[in-house]
Amino acid sequence: MRILFFFTLLFPLVTHAADIEYKLIINDHRFQPVELTIPSVTKIKLTVENQDATPEEFDSHPLNREKTIAGHSTATIYIGPLVPGRYTFTGEFHEATAQGVIIAQ
Amino acid sequence: MFGTAIIVFREVLEASLIIGILAAATRSVPNSKRWLSAGVLAGLAGSGLVAAFTDVIGSLASGVGQEIFNAIVLGIAVLMLAWHNIWMSSHGAALAASAKSAGRNITDGSSECSILLVIVGLAVLREGSETVLFLYGIAASNDGGQSSMLLGGMVGMLAGITVGYTLYAGLLRVPMRWFFAATGILVLLLAAGMASQAAHFLIQADLLPSLAAPLWDTSAVLPENGLPGMLLHSLVGYDSRPAGMQIVFYLTALVAIFIGMKWVARPRQAPIKNNDIKITCP
Image (cartoon, rainbow over all chains, first blue to last red; front, side, top):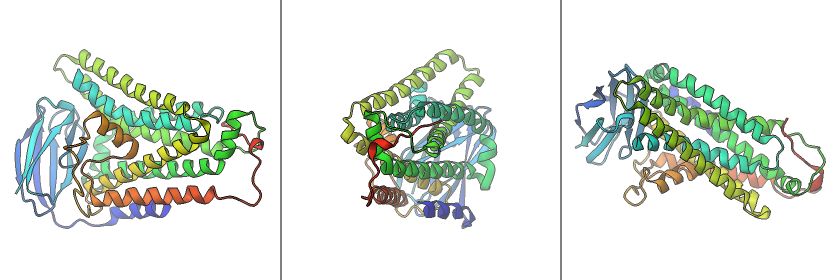
């Protein structure tokens, strides 16, 4: 386990390959755009900019992703490659309004 | 209010179950509750700090600082749980005896006591910081209805604590001869589940390959946002759509800790007399 742990410490040194970037904005507890179409065959870098003053949690069980985003800040989430289909996501802290879907094609 | 209760419940549940299991596992260690409580307090203080610096942590390492932070916290927790479990298997027989009769004081368990503090502290820190942020968001917004949402938060918190306490009370009813095996298995699965979660964060940060994502999809049968899925997620690391790498981490932790437990519990030439040992926390 100890070896495994030290091994994981080395991973931040691994450099990223060039990523295709997509962007979501959170404003007034809503995602913009509500629907985002991405290629399914590749990994993408999704940046989520929270323009609200309050924190939000990007949460998607279908994508197996969750990330807290502080007010007035931007987060990076890596997604895919995916099986083509619809993947819903929510802002868990404001689930009534913060809803969106990623369409992988 | 209901939505708030569920969010807070989900966050509190995991820490609460961990505390419940550890409190039961160390039932016969005098003063262990004191160390567990200190862990909760340290974790709560840490939660406030982490919540306050969420934007700073998040912006580290080109935007994946939060994932790295979570993975490190989980990694430390896995090591501590491994240590705890291996330590318990080497002293299990003695502990079982001292739970029945008052043994004489020989072995000092102070390192084990600080391990308890760290495990509980980290569990509360990780789950607590999200709860703090969430409740802060409610308090800071001017949407109205804050009091009903904060009430929901309280309900969720109490429900989470109740489940952890129920597990604790249930474990105490397990007969002594099964007791250490039962808590040992629970801690083992807890640690493996955390290793899988650590891998999940490193994949999300693109620092680890997913291998296969998802390896399977059981979200239709046992969704993670339902109560059974939620409990299984916290207890044994259940994931309805795990990546292959998560399973690699899960099994590696499981096997490594299991071998460690078996190795220290192997029969020795000069067995320690059970009633000579009593472990005490200062």
